[in-house]
Length: 249
Image (cartoon, rainbow, N blue to C red; front, side, top):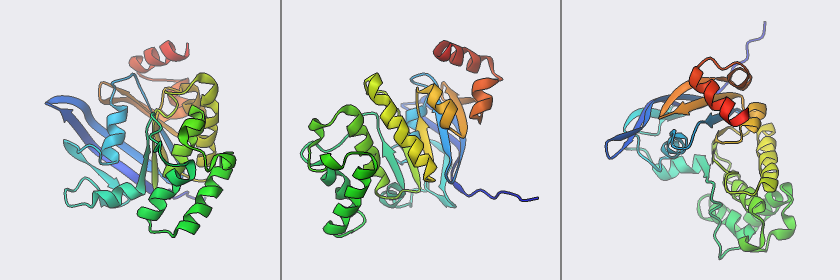
């Protein structure tokens, strides 16, 4: 019998976070394996975005540990800039630099963070833009792109650095409904390429279809977790059933 060995890319152990004494995360445990999508679902204010910000070290945990591979990245001595090179984070607001072309937005970190020569960085950016159908917009500025195009470019800017983990924070919530599908298709493609992703999302049908593992958060706690088919198809906890019924019917 063959035993599949999975590489754990990131895991969080007992993560707590409070702001001004008000708990936002209450003992979160999470595991992410190579090539896996973990979906965080829950109402607004449940702690999803805060958890992603703690993983990316934009927020300091109040207690608990987060490991990238075998390295404790919550250790105060850690080089936070080095960690962030390995953990890409894309927000619901596209955050593209308005004064730079789409290509320049992608090449900026390649040149300044990875030290890649400008010509090679341009070639990489062109290939990434071609991959998402934006090759003709390489020299355009972000305000000439639709919201869906801007979000896809923002995701590829993060992917360009080849991070070990990609964090997606409600990347479709600011989009018009007809533009959501093109961003979700890109996420589906990234998974097929083996990208390890943690995504906070309200797109529950997409999470059900694409995620490998789902965590339902409520008031900073994991109420229920498991394979997507189980959480969506046979939720064990009343709070999970209530949430899914309200949003999915």
